[in-house]
Image (cartoon, rainbow, N blue to C red; front, side, top):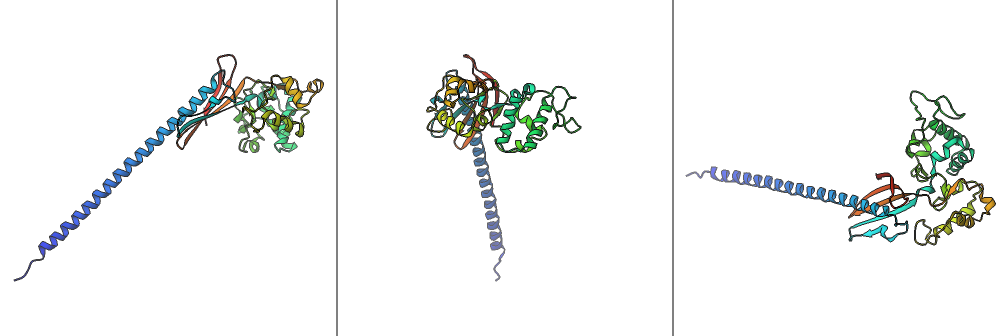
Length: 304
């Protein structure tokens, strides 16, 4: 009598189908688990981004208080091991105000800009072109042009008004190479009162001023910044007047006269950079504020 092999074949096929179904089910479960994990990760990252932004804004709000100074302890705060904010306040007046330097084409003020560009490594011919093109850019009379400037054309349209933003320099002929360098705008502004605030001016900005030398500026900065070598910290020398700064520089009252109209002290405009951190996520808020009286005036706010 012959034994049928059909039942064993059917059982084998059923087993294979069951294993295949189990494999598909396992794949679906793994896919579902990975999708949930991905969604949880995205949700967690989104929450950390919001927390970091909120912390950065909180630090900025603290900096707005009239009694808060650049060396105030309240500018650094840690909520827990994962959440914190850190705020730095610097004087906007320590930067070169471009509109102030260009106003009226004063040769002394333009000389500051010219000297600053020289310090930054720009050669004579380039400096002449850059300054004349910039003067043409802000010149309200469209028919007037400077010797080394650039005329209006189909693909070049000067605004013929004062600069509205520092990064507008990128549009001015001759400034492309200068504005391509990282940090090119760090010593420039449009938001100060104008005269250079010697309590915040950088080394290069100070060297651009008439009568300044490297040994003099280096000695002054060492005194101003204190032992840690950083402006805006508790160990800084606290000058009470421009006359005290004059004495620290080693100028006599007579020698200081040539600088009197070009420099200032405690410009009310300050730059606030607040860094909020949640876990490994960081967000930065930057503001420019004029601190006058009890109500600070917000000039600029942006997220970096």
